[in-house]
Image (cartoon, rainbow, N blue to C red; front, side, top):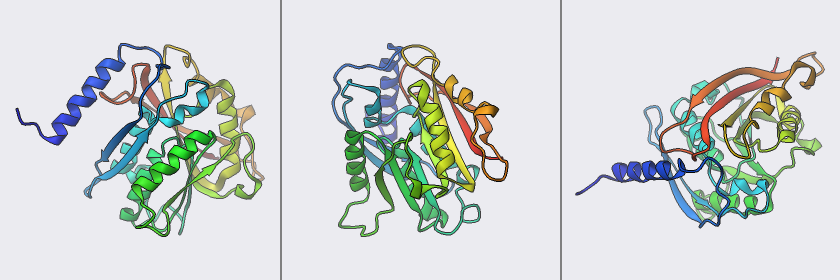
Length: 276
């Protein structure tokens, strides 16, 4: 039986979903590196295509989870490509030469998708930094950037990899980012507070921080998503010189998509955060 490429891809995704559903927690067993091809439909234009290497997790600690592409990054990338205006990804919404930072970029899927999407939206050039903390994750991230934007073909890289410690954001990056993005980056109670303070340090006066959090109802990360809203209780929110608080402006519950994510992922919450 002859199958189209799309049909074969759907069969593989469905099989992966069925297998992952047998496990309610992240699998810490040895895994192999995997090359993944993503194609995100756009609103009337050519699809955005990204090639990634998902490297095996070491299992030593949670900080190397960025070696693999998780469901939230896939969902957020697809939403941004399909509905860029929803996220303010337009020439009229963003300043000239906007600065965009992804926190906990991992494999770089969201940043790479944006780097390919923005020129088609007449948002170019943009300074796009994919940041992470773990050295092994950063090395894999750089490899993925080189794969999607080969050095010989692009003198000026549209996206760069950069080390960033949320607990110690660099002073020279204060109020430097017009748009912040983070996908599935909260894995311990202190992460949400670090993320809040780091984002408040980086964001411009009228910038927006988009955060998508994975809801896991079983396993070692159960309850971790609740720490995000707890970190943004009014008395804990950072304040600026204008009396504004860095707070959650909107939250949207997103359903889990068939064939995307792992068995312990039950859905996602998308937050729009900024000064108000």
